[in-house]
Length: 299
Ligand code: C2E
Ligand code: MG
Ligand code: MG
Ligand code: MG
Image 1 (cartoon, rainbow, N blue to C red):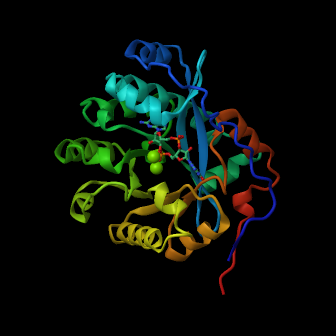
Image 2 (cartoon, rainbow, N blue to C red):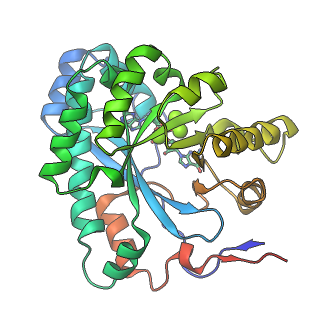
């Protein structure tokens, strides 16, 4: 049985205020300006091993606090950036910010964290868009950013949603293979929400499969969701992919995921996404990390 002991959970510092962003027109010029003015920041959410709570990595999630209209959610600005054709610039900016944070706070951590960080070798997950796969120089851009920030690409996981990965399977295969060759890990995000066949999935060089949050969130109430989650974990295992469940909000869901053999978990039960400073402080100041104090007891 899984038990979480010690260490208070960090407070969410990026909860969205509903109604704070009702009517703003996300015109391309506004988006371009926002990218140039560095109005986008990142929140980082820890990912831990389902079995023993060991730190496995962090997912970088973009945040936009518009100077006038307040917080705008990614589900709104990401599609707008895609439509405006600004994904190459956006992803490069976000990836640069994330890699810089990762280098300073995780790979070269101050004080006590150094040993544990080296031992765990946590990874950095960055979300990318199908539009990036239509960018012939995308693998070189990403490699260049990794070089600049002195991060080995093997520590970087690029997350692509199931639906966008299969937009154009031929294009995807070419670009994804080049990213793999450069050393990046590749993750198929929100799996279960689309309609990929096992054959399509097996052709693409992924290293991780992320169970769509909708199934994780309803796992306790719905037998259908439970069997979907279980099948996705098993599909991943049969293809040699690590499985990650996101949106884990309570202990019972965590226990179910452990029971079906899911590898990694991410969600409010473990930690909310946090600003880089907050997360670094939290990592440094926690006398005992919650995920370290996590105890797995099997009888
Ligand atoms: P995603 O990549 O599937 O990210 C997981 C989403 O679930 C995040 O929403 C995260 O804040 C949220 N989440 C994590 N744990 C929990 C939980 O326990 N309960 C609930 N209810 N939610 C949880 P967020 O940050 O709003 O991002 C939404 C989507 O926007 C992301 O889904 C991703 O597809 C996209 N996105 C975010 N940042 C970027 C980015 O930098 N680039 C690209 N291309 N897409 C991004
Ligand atoms: Mg993601
Ligand atoms: Mg997801
Ligand atoms: Mg999503």
